[in-house]
Length: 406
Ligand SMILES: Cc1cc2nc3c(=O)[nH]c(=O)nc-3n(C[C@H](O)[C@H](O)[C@H](O)COP(=O)(O)OP(=O)(O)OC[C@H]3O[C@@H](n4cnc5c(N)ncnc54)[C@H](O)[C@@H]3O)c2cc1C
Image 1 (cartoon, protein in one colour):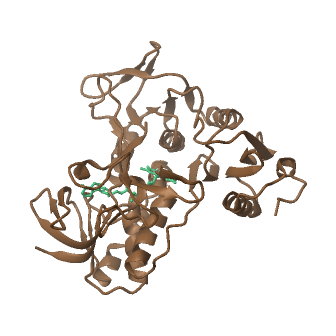
Image 2 (tube, rainbow, N blue to C red):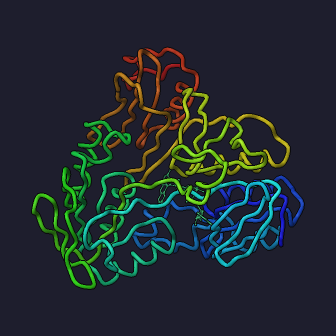
């Protein structure tokens, strides 16, 4: 049985950046192994719903490190290998082909699985979900011969896919249950209205407050029927209605699961040698004083890198301010913090012209900030003000002529 000092279960974003940092820190060759169900070395997922689906980027370009990097540094990557069971006491994993792999330290980085839409016709060949590079390639393959697409979901993946397929040249209808786009994730009503205006101007047919009743068509869907009775012609459908943490194989182990794998401030589970990172980890956020699980690229990257530093001698707690970004059409925004508990929002700049920032406050402390096409000093101030928890003058924050609070 092959055995490694350090094993990463899962080959996504957390794994890729963990391996990169591990190598940068000069660990001995042959001491790290990544086991992944995917047929590829770790890659970044954000480009899949953006440049890749718009037809402007090959998924291969999204790799975090090329295959040669792993060969050169003797990092074993076992691809196409789904782990089906884990023996915590014996410190072994077993894969679907019956291969056992031993570990000294294990990083669980299994990420998320897509939530499926439970309606008749969902199993047709032209109903797609988007999680992997393979999914993106299949959607693009279908888009080549398509004129129309229906995108189900009004959150991150839905909005990005609707924008990219429109850029690709399809007529896109976007159907979502909420009454507005990106509702509270993190857009306010005014911000959603701005986004919806841009989407409509770009040609997306938005259908808020609607849910899918069924997909019609023989082998392939040709029509989407909504609960309201509306019918939409579709050559292909992409569903983006959220994800769930991939914890199935840990359910019969002593690893604590509570909407993800519960870890401490060093990303450790209660079992010696096992940590978790990325979408699957529920960790204590010291800045906000609450446990959270984050389904975003930057957190997975930061936690993967943190693990590699911990495996190579560092012993500081994981210190992180939640951050994420999204791009659709020409709108690229960034966000820091957590809007939960916010009492008011102030804006800097003008919503209508697409250059503004939003600042969520509780009493006079900034909890979260959203920045769209603004000077770098606002990006810096967002992080500084949230982390410090210092009182700010909200009127001054909202006044573009006034300098940002120190
Ligand atoms: C299309 C798309 C666009 C995105 N865009 C953005 C964005 O713009 N901004 C942003 O902040 N975030 C974005 N995200 C989210 C971000 O990519 C994720 O948060 C990130 O990938 C999480 O990293 P991870 O390593 O935890 O999991 P993943 O990257 O999902 O990797 C998990 C890996 O584990 C493997 N695995 C799971 N179970 C097993 C098993 N039993 N055996 C073997 N292998 C297993 C999987 O095959 C996969 O390779 C996007 C996600 C997607 C899908």
